Image (cartoon, rainbow, N blue to C red; front, side, top):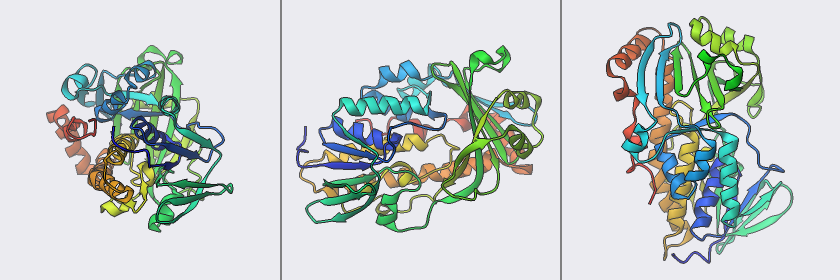
Length: 399
């Protein structure tokens, strides 16, 4: 164990990224306080996918058994044409992912992952402060004084902004423009598989691609529920941060236009939708975008990304592992450790952000580009669907 007794880490934000950072750092002996603005930690939304690069880290934190109790482990990823229903390609997952990558491919409800991480954080001794929103900080050379909206002040050797896409920590650190609206709206829903007719139940990840739209669905909660996400092009909300609101099936169907019978039946089976406006930023361009001095950014605060590579939560968890490793390096100052963290993470995050943007264009393609997409997937299948540079053991920080 390296000498970390002198550190006091303060994390702003109790989402997946903040909790993951708290777990990773506390397990390495770093004292952690986590400030979360909500009165209780809860997660809106629905399911997420976590690839082998992520499940490998969760296993390294001793959370493999807990993950297995609440997640689903789809047998394959299948791509289909949203208009014709034709199967374009299939990527085996199931037993293949652990064999190829040393860890499984999982799908999980956000609340289940967040609950798993919260319990691990508390077991590791993290000091969790609810109802506290980081507002600003002052660097007093030896330490930071961090002030909250609620009027409290905390001393810390480092501050980690894991406070999401509208990060107040980022605003003071970088002073850049707000996150940008992507022009895409996500309709999300959860449906009990028992309530669906047998032919609509699923134990796989299915992606439907069509003109200016795509739909993905997969099992969560040990396969008992089906998570559905339909993404279409749409108008920006009146208020940027009013990103989660009730969605209406009629509006979704109108935005999607003509889709095949199979997909239409799946969408019509959903009793209620939530609509999310999607925001992101341009890919990270330098290490200083993620850390300066005693302050660093993590997850969506650093690199909000589009969902077309299913790696938003994954990159936050990778960030957390890298942060813990860098803070455990002896004989380095805190600014040096945070600089090392940013240097280790910025290029990979930028690559994932860029690939997610590219995937969105491919998923939503029209005309000749859509024709070429379908042809290449039919001819090459898993060779164009697999991403070994992302999932491979050399890509993540599991040591």
